[in-house]
Length: 149
View 1 (cartoon, rainbow, N blue to C red):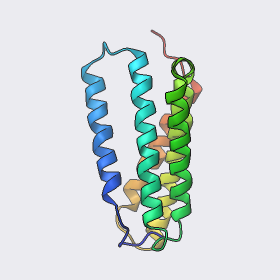
View 2 (view 1 turned 90 degrees about the horizontal axis):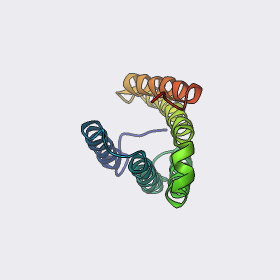
View 3 (view 1 turned 180 degrees about the vertical axis):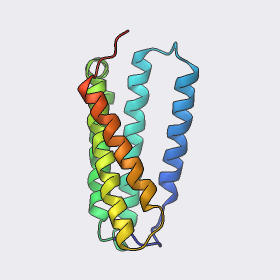
View 4 (view 1 turned 90 degrees about the vertical axis):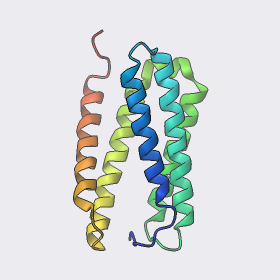
């Protein structure tokens, strides 16, 4: 169960800020190439995995569900590594990678929101809402992965 004394909680705050900055930069530079987009996402998924692994290992004695954080972090780490090592393939199948990654993270957020509710931790509604939005966005991306240009 998630306990209020989780160590290194700030790692997810830093990750969130990095993703917001990344999103603003991408919005402001529409001329950036799709290759750059693939590399940026590859690196951000890799970093997300590293942060999740650090969080899970540092909280393994305080959280019963630390293993799920570890599995999510390992998934992100492996996926990020594959994306970085195969940029040509990444360009072709990036929408599918992103769709399944977003789907996995959305389902993870939904599950975590129920754990928050079970221990009386605040914020479970917002986590549940973000999880459902991620699942919806992932579904849309997977149903139509290639946009019309």
